Length: 190
Image (cartoon, rainbow, N blue to C red; front, side, top):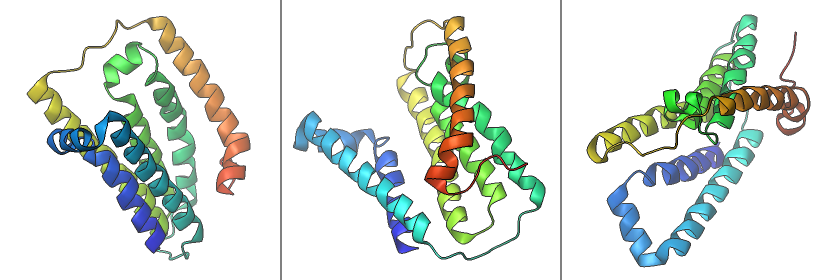
């Protein structure tokens, strides 16, 4: 469990650190832009590796037994999560309306999986990412109030069609093929 906690602290802490503009600027001044990006990448990769290893090796400590119907919640929420994830990279109406579609996707992923898993490691993993998503959105909203919204390109409805289509394809491929291989659990159990 210690590796999971350490990984979450590194990965999520590193991502929260990017919101601290003053501290970040100090570190960039000391290390240079490339040095900062290298350190940030190293911390993120190490954190992610520890999260994966920690979750995979964590003992199963049941906290509650989720009802059988909760397994359908992540299946349902992951389709819009994948669409939002793709939309984060395409200037369309989805991205414009959600403002931060990647954070919205993260929160959908975390909330859906949190409800469907009742063990301690899952609560730490999915609860940690859900808390990060909420905190990051609050910090971004405060930052945008203080410094103004980031200017984005014009929204293109065609990009929304691409986001929905590509998100649906990735959702299906991940659910059918990758989830059982990477996670060891079939995503679609009917």
